[in-house]
Length: 114
Length: 116
Image 1 (cartoon, rainbow over the protein chains, first blue to last red):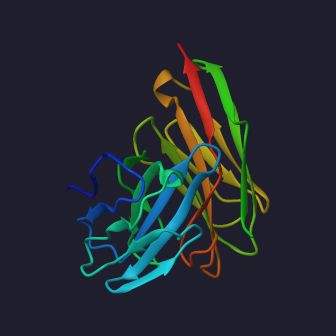
Image 2 (tube, each protein chain N blue to C red):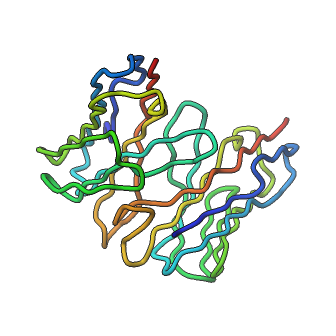
């Protein structure tokens, strides 16, 4: 039971480059989420998706793009990375909004933008 | 705007010394309050969900309780392996939370260290 996986686990990039973080879940959960975790801020929601081809903004969406063509995948793209996007990124999934609302998290991707 | 405040920020206990972590929240309508455990370099691990005031849940040495304004995570006779950061999060009843319809609003966490 693989659950939810993220890749890469670590990434170093330069300002202005495009970066894509991958998230894959094997539970067939409807909902998927992207959060970032920064010291002093806790976890903050970037984007989420209720189903394939349905996405919506969270608290801090600027500078990020998401897509969801398949239920199991939810990639997060930084179109032009900035130093302020240096963070640890977590993907999460949940079965449904009105059923089991518990969100299960992946192991995270530590991104450094130089 | 939903707010979650956790206290203390850090707590150091001796093995076997029981204590409680606090999570105060402000939300227009609460769908659920969640407790997670996070170990260094790992993702949050789900512990409990509480839905209404008066509800309690237990798991091994942990017990979570909920009132209309706060939640407590009680740790009884902790062991060194209980050392972690404990995160509290809320989800709003109408589905809107911190800018995302189904997202969670997290506190900054309590860093707990249990010394042998």
